Structures are given as structure tokens and as C-alpha cells.
Amino acid sequence: MAEVLVYVDHVDGAVRKPTLELLTLARRVGEPVAVALGAGAEATAAVLAEHGAVKVLTADAPEFADYLVVPKVDALQAAYEAVSPVAVLVPSSAEGKEIAARLAVRIGSGIITDAIDLEAGEEGPVATQSAFAASFTTKSRVSKGTPVITVKPNSAAVEAAPAAGAVEALAVTFGALATGTKVVGRTPRESTGRPELTEAAIVVSGGRGVNGAENFHLIEELADSLGAAVGASRAAVDAGWYPHTNQVGQTGKSVSPQLYIATGISGAIQHRAGMQTSKTIVAINKDAEAPIFDLVDYGVVGDLFEVVPQLTGEIKARKG
Image 1 (cartoon, rainbow, N blue to C red):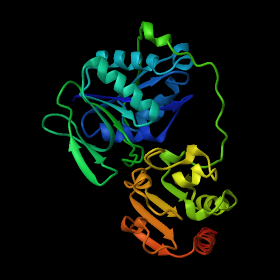
Image 2 (image 1 turned 45 degrees about the vertical axis):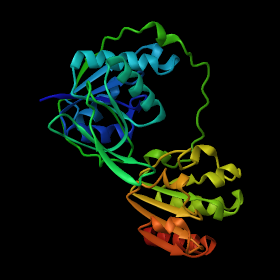
Image 3 (image 1 turned 90 degrees about the vertical axis):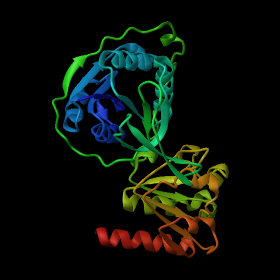
């Protein structure tokens, strides 16, 4: 059976959820071969094998940590040349999309970004995408070379499918550009204890209607009761009420959770572009004519300062 390369996103051997989703999608079009790079690469093998990787190619070198993406592109290209896959799948993060784009240029192939589904086709893998701020759904395939496809988090359910997961060392030769941009410092992200925004199954976002940074604790408390990530609209982050790293929208982060709760958000097209592919959308807004209500599965017309505390209390009561 044909093989599919899957780029592994991990932190010191802890595999992140989008990679496990990629393995599920990869099994639809071939046998997954995982590529794990950097410190802890070999430690990923057990989890990857549990989720369908027939082989795990690993490589570790200082270049992966000390420089930006080019060393990883060198390694993924080496894996591509060793395996000759029918497709290469990469998580659709900022770094993942840069790696995928550079690889596609090097191997002379087409690229599809931000896919939300993948299926086998007679002429190669067919990817589903959301286009024009999720107003349309398209299906497309690469017509030249081996498809390089980035997939948005939460696009597929993680499914266990035990496989061999044989670990093999990947020989990598770094090119002249690999050391062109050096990482000179790192600042650990302050942990909130909440899920990563782009990977969370549930996201609760606040907008202009929250009416101040001092009121965002209502959004945080609702999110914490659900085990959710916290997002914010552009209006909220531009006003300084919440960090820009939590912005959801066309100029922020795109999310596709199982449940998205928009509180005090009118639903401008800029915001909708970043969350419209969510599986279930709930809006709380006192303006019954707000555009967000054209999009939702469930809408609550009411003052968020009354509705959100009641909702949080009810969730806590049911869980308790």
C-alpha cells in the first residue's frame, strides 16, 4: 500500500493532538509514515504507533532547535526522497504552513493549505477546504507532483489504530540555508492551564459587548467550567482587554472546535472568517439583529452579564 508522510508536531516527545488527527486522515489514503524531529523524537514512537504509524523516521540535531524552519524542511525533504510518498501531511500551524510551502517548492509539487477533510480519489488525495471566509466549501487535488497538504486542527476525530511503528533513523544533510536564521532567545509562554486555542475542542470568546478587561473574568469562568480555551474578537484585543495571542478572526487565529460560544460578538465577517468552520456555534448577544445570529446553531438574545453567570452556574451545578 502507498505510504503517506506525516510531519510530527511534538514538544520533547509529547505528541500534540493535531498530529494524531493527521494520522487518522493519512490512513484514508495510505499507510502513515511519521517524521519526528528534534529532542525527544524517539519518545514519540509509542503514541504514533498506537494511532496508525507503520514507521517512525527520527532525527535529532542541534540545528532543529537552534535555527528556524529550514533544518526541518531539509529533514522532511530527506524523508520524502527516502519514502516516495503519495502525499505529505503537515499540521496547519504558522510554522507548519511555512515548512509545507518550502517543501512544495523544493520538490516541485502543488500545495493545499488549511484543509478540513481528506479522502482518497482516483487521481490522488482530495482535500476539502473552506473558502471565502467559510462561505463556500471546495474540494481540490494537486495536479502536479506529490500533494503537500496542511490540515487545520480539529478537522478529524483522533482514532486509535495500532500499527508497527518501527523506528528508523533518518539521515539528514543540512543545506547552506539551514543556519541562515538563528534563534537567539526564547521566552516561555505563561501557562493558563487552558487548552491551546487552535487545538481546543471548546472555545469561549468575548467581544466588544464584554465592555472592558475587568469583565473578561466572566468569559474565563465560563471557559473554565467547560474546560475550554478563551478567545477574543479583534475589537476586544485592539481595545487592550485581552492579549492579541487570543484573537480569533481573519487577522488572528482560525479555530474549528466542536463547540464555539460567542459572547458579546456582533459577527463581523473578519471574526466569522476565523471560526465559521466550528461544528456547533452558540451566540449570546442582546442585539437580536446582530449578524452572528445568521450563522449560529443556537442563539440567546440577552445581556451577557446576566446570561453568562447563569450558564456558568448551571454547568458547574450539573458537573458537581
